[in-house]
Image (cartoon, rainbow over all chains, first blue to last red; front, side, top):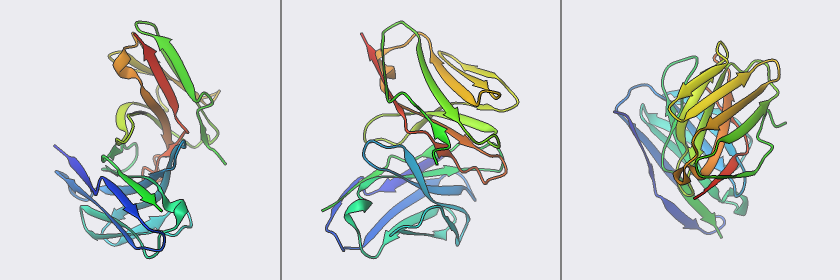
Amino acid sequence: SQTIHQWPATLVQPVGSPLSLECTVEGTSNPNLYWYRQAAGRGLQLLFYSVGIGQISSEVPQNLSASRPQDRQFILSSKKLLLSDSGFYLCAWSWGQGWETQYFGPGTRLLVL
Amino acid sequence: DQQVKQNSPSLSVQEGRISILNCDYTNSMFDYFLWYKKYPAEGPTFLISISSIKDKNEDGRFTVFLNKSAKHLSLHIVPSQPGDSAVYFCAASRSSNTGKLIFGQGTTLQVKP
């Protein structure tokens, strides 16, 4: 069966510090991978998605970047965090094309102070 | 532009009764719709989906109805249980769009014993 991991679970970082969140998927190959953010009291906003190694599409202009160095690894980064980057970050995967169901990881709670 | 809207931020029902969660969308190109359930500090869990070729899909206590002409879908939970208390998100996608999901803002369901 497929499993998706995210770490860390919680992170408190000062403004201006760098960020690296990691997501890995087990039990499948060539998945589509996604990063979402849920800000306090709001829905889920798609930040990035990737259909293959090195292929990243950005959905919204922002202070963050994403990379996919391996087939089942997806990394969310920032060089300098802003207060507005605080939120709950979720990684998701799906497989195939067309009508796809996405499966989410446990999430990372990021607080920027 | 909010393409997927859940206009009720919260809903409270009695245990054993029916819960009806609503969702409206504006993009007629959407052809796949999903409902997710989310507990605090956890990733969303996939519940049920429906494609645009159907108007109803049922899975146990959960039924999703799709009214394409009204661009409206609803999730029915019968009977409601206290463990159903969570935030419910509807999401929509286009089969030709690499499976990207557009989420609503979520509805918090409280099922009272």
